[in-house]
Length: 269
Image (tube, rainbow, N blue to C red; front, side):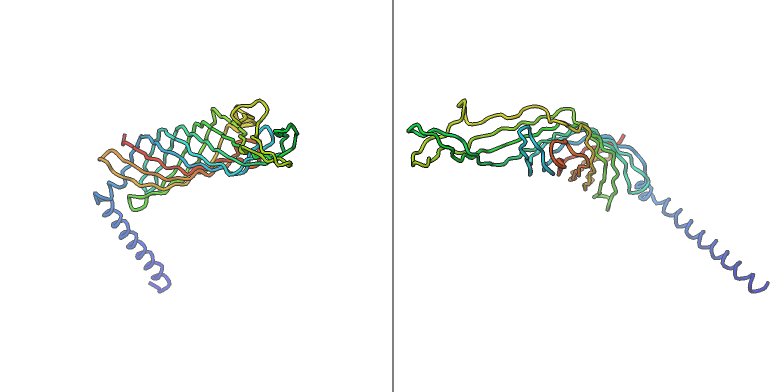
């Protein structure tokens, strides 16, 4: 047989031998009971409970055209979850739950207010007020996600958060902080507001105006997989919600970010 024909034949024979060796190795791995157990495919059903540390992004504006920034707060979350393992290190899942998102933002301002001195003269004097706004959102959430396992103990997770705000509230109060003033003529007097009261005025109290009820975001997280028994798993999870949609058009790029800590318990079906 000419040399030009022997070389392709030799390459084909070598390819078949290598393929046979690889298949033989795969068969050995498949026959390993430990490896086979890792590749079992099953479903899990469970629940989670936790809390989120919330921070405001952008600004929101109340009815008096007051702008609030830098709000923060905390909220609870809880719900149900489902997971489906694959024959790899990837697990698919979804959660359905409730998320409370509330932030409080404050700023101080000094205004010129007309006050009457003890001698009966009127002056415009600087008075300091504390403006405080509280926003509360009650959200139904759903999150399809994928997680990848590292070393059979740790995993990373990425998901798409879809939320619906079924109830909201916005409260804006203005509180007098200056207790006494000194008038230009040297007289000193206590500060009073029209109508008296305790020095706090409610400027707005109701639902969030121009609310975007549909809230979308990306969730990135890490967790641990702890085996409580053959069918029970416990997972502490830390994840971060990055919002995509704004909460209201009353403001500029108003969002609420959340650093969430939760405990998940799952049972093999």
